Length: 253
Figure 1 (cartoon, helix red, strand yellow):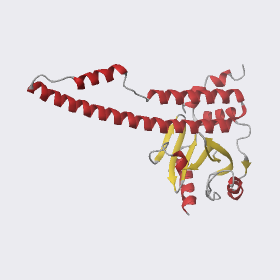
Figure 2 (figure 1 turned 45 degrees about the horizontal axis):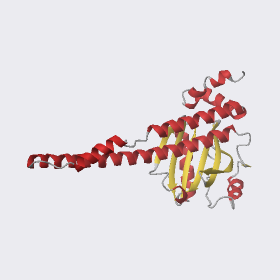
Figure 3 (figure 1 turned 90 degrees about the vertical axis):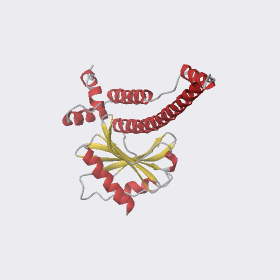
Figure 4 (figure 1 turned 90 degrees about the horizontal axis):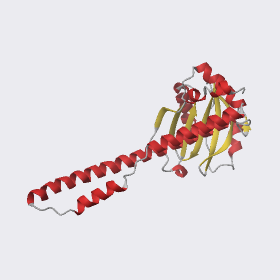
């Protein structure tokens, strides 16, 4: 098949291990090839599922039974009573630590799952034949287009003196939450900017996040006012950060 040579490189592409020129060539191919785009999306979803599954831990029934039996046991002497008190305290500490670790792990897994869902949206959009619903390089055209389509408003930066180009935008959904999805370009790299209401995504985010790498993409997220912003793309971390600063300045002015 024509695409076999591309598909043999698909995992390397998704892991971000291709040279920068190779990433650009592959990005171009994925946008025009429905078959490779579908395979890329399927593998991203599989990676997301594996990551989430690997971070879950639930004590099994045997562990619970042994703890309950230990608690129910009656000490036979003062020494045994003292030893049991120490053992009980240690078990309590271990249980609290285990619960805290599990809770934090679930929080982290939930946030990583959200990142993966946004990565899916980014890949699917770039692979679409119509990646944007409103095509324009003018922020004064793109911003008004969203009015009445999403339950909030936002400000966009002036890009005349920057390296970034606004290609357009579309309505998107994270779960059942509507938001704005903007597409920017810098040196032939496409970057997605997602904007949602902070309150409607409560529980999905736990802290400000500097530029991090998720799968083959660089990502950054922050809350500002009542909105949550998330930037994702295969552009350099410095480019992601520079675009974030432009958006922060526009939203704060």
